[in-house]
Image 1 (cartoon, rainbow, N blue to C red):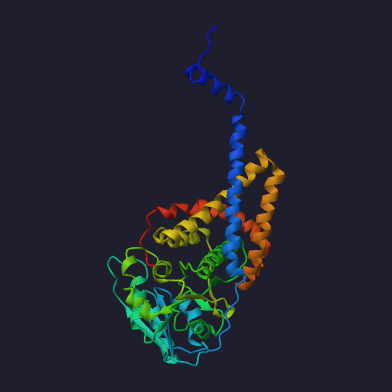
Image 2: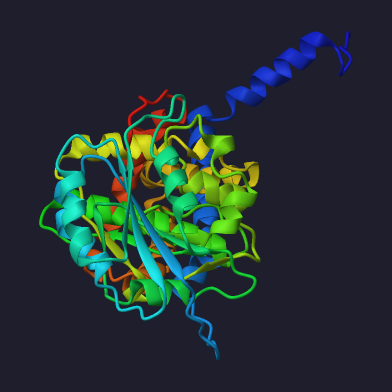
Length: 396
């Protein structure tokens, strides 16, 4: 009788055929899907427990000594007569007894902005108007007028906001500057949106809240990576010694997040969550307008430091995959286990969001947060192209 050796190619081929014929290939695929779902859920839970809880449960440091520093508030405006009419008085009547000024850089406006500012100046002498009538070739966005405004600032602390923003209280300047001490050079504040009726308002406010939870939490974890120009402060010397926006002048946006990403350190950055320090903006009324605004803002993320891109992308990608993998695992594997994992994440996320929404005065969104979290899957689909799409060079 003739026997084939174990290493004979024919024997090996027959053995492999037998092995695969006894294995359910579709079953293997769904097991892999379920395994990926477990990994993605674990990543999400770790982000909430190890990172985002820092902002949700943050307690402001008790400080024995409060200084009052001279402050220069800076706004850049281009054809913003309507917004300035509504919002500039809120900046000019701030209750701050120390020295301060409000600088409005009027960048080549074609509307009534110049005449409006002249009228405001007659009543408020702390208003400093800078009129620019030329464009900066090769510097898109508002980095050029903002640079001029910072160089014109008389005082060492600059406090930035936008023409469509208004402070939530008359103590905005006082409490934002109070966060400074000898080591702190950057103060990150919250820029929210006015509460209006309708789904779009909830989407806009939730997205702003979601971003704030991230940049506040990262800063508290010693990894500050961005701030928002609607409510941001830093020392003028920090701007000058880093040559301003010279390294990012080619980027359309980035006058807030990219600059902070470049100069912020664990030691020189502080967040402040006092509701008197919030600013409020008028949200977009049309989805298309908001979409264009977000595409412009999101286009800067690819310029962040590698460690920030890795951490942010890991969270976003796991968030994006979570719900599709949940559905597939529930249908093709075991719905009880899948829903159990979903429930664990839901409880942890709900606790973090409830605390964070209370801190940022967005608690009316809590009843909708689970639906808004599902919406984030579509948000990533819509705005993912901004990572590679070239943006049109407009002013704002």
